[in-house]
Image (cartoon, rainbow, N blue to C red; front, side, top):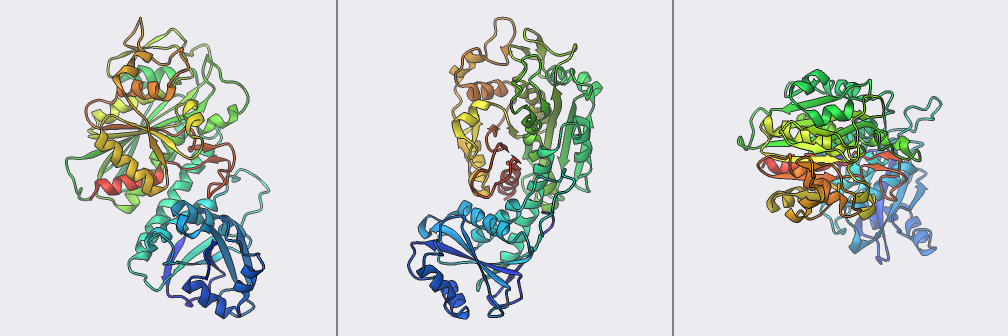
Length: 498
């Protein structure tokens, strides 16, 4: 789904192709809005409820054709579950279900906001717009005979209290567009999206306030980035360090520079520590963190948020050749520390090590990195939460609040100096993995801390929610990239600009 127009109107205005209304289960009488709608429909909603066809269960929809009784051609009743349990994810899921139900007609989709729900009208509007846009996404753009769905071109939010909703909902729609771009990048086949091609895609987003450059393998070597260089050297498609700088017209906090770092392994075969063949094709999505950083920078620039940001995306292919880096190699990272390689499939932390250093060198005062880093994090949290680590409590809480508000959920995990022993090496300053099957997401975070420099730093391990193997059962129903991180970054940038 591309651009979507947002309008806010009083109930009864306009002629939407479809009008959606939320319907809780076990809630007794209809809300005022649904009761008025039922009156216009000659009691058809109540009769459906009495016969059990309107159950209100989350994700269910019932369509009524109005036959001229309303200015909308059809009404879609969207189940939202128990009224007192409705939250933003509930409405996102209901909105996605409605979008799927009207995929054959598209056009203008109206949504009735319900003040009796335990969410503010602004929260409802945000969730409905996000659910519609993200739920309508299709990863099938490479199919030659794909039957395209009719696109929802306009979302009309109906309420008697429209104050400020149109502007805020339009901003959310703008962000949703960039979330879906990140999904396109993560879903792109690796023969199409090489590190150089990703750099080209990023450069296309440059504008008056957004500067984009990409360092090639020679420049990476000149900077002494031995970790990034080693990961990418086995491929004929050499690595790139993609750097995006956003300078607002006037920053609210001039002393603050948000640093974003993204892992972008455009294909990960595991190197000499070769991955199993089963599901290796999904390793095209090992650049979802980098995709989120690139798309979020475009969103921030479009919104003209008053916060300075430097973003660094480390892009490489981790393949096998006569020039592969090996277990037993000792690499020197850009900050001077040496790394013993014990597993070439623990490559993400290597490329992030040099990217974190570069972000600090470019002036980042507060760092956040995003990476599909460890399979163990997916085992721990599944496909809904990412793991969050930070070296300062205040910074952890700031990122955590942005995650909760945005819908890109994260859960805090511990860091402690005692975990450092997991990556102690007899031969170098540290090693890149542990032989023990214990705490691998934590030891990966401890590894990254060695390269995060001075100041607040946080790490998000998004292995689970960044790239899905199957429907998540909510508003993210498609296999592949989710765009995780884009909404979180934009929300964090908004918080830092206040």
